[in-house]
Amino acid sequence: MLDIRLYMLQRITAMIMAPLTLGHIAVMIYAIQGGLSSAEILGRTQGSVMWFLFYGTFVVAVSVHAAIGLRVIVAETFKMAGFALSVLTWSLCLIFLFMGARAVMAVTML
Amino acid sequence: MIRPHRAHSLWFAYILHRLSGLGLAVFLPAHFYVLSLALTQPERLDSLLQWSDQPVVKFAEFGLVFLLAVHIFGGLRLLAMEFLPWSANQKTIAASAVAGAFLISTTFFLQAI
View: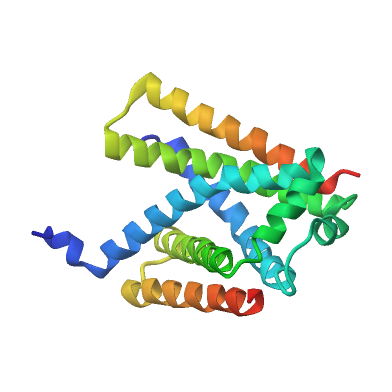
């Protein structure tokens, strides 16, 4: 890890995601029975403030967590550092956030 | 020749955590893209969901659930190691993380098929 703040941020986002991930796995095992359809998924999630907050929190936490994780892998594997590494980290985080926010809106908004 | 530290079982726990995290991060944009089709092209979402009914895709999903489960259990092991008092049975905890992930992903797979 390259920076104590990133190190702590990685732990904090992990702690936020721990219960969310277990919930996500439970929903997957429940929902996969009999196959998936968009009607089934949207019937569960559309218009639900609870699922919006659940997946919204998940997306924010995972965007930070995945960007920092990839940053560490790239830094250690390819010896990238400095400004280029910061640009890469921020770009990854923003791409995850944008795509994730779109996905959450697509399944929870009416 | 395999370097000595790479024969340690906790090196296996480290590389499993790193590779599962990498795999999940690579999968994430595809996951988000498919879900966002509900907004833009609902009929394409349904055709993709039908496509995912194939046994080979179910098997790939089994792998993804294993990656997610082994990453969270391995991550909980790391958090416990860093923030809780040290315990001597690190190898047992790491092995339990893999076993737990296998149990959960197999449960998912049996429900999926």
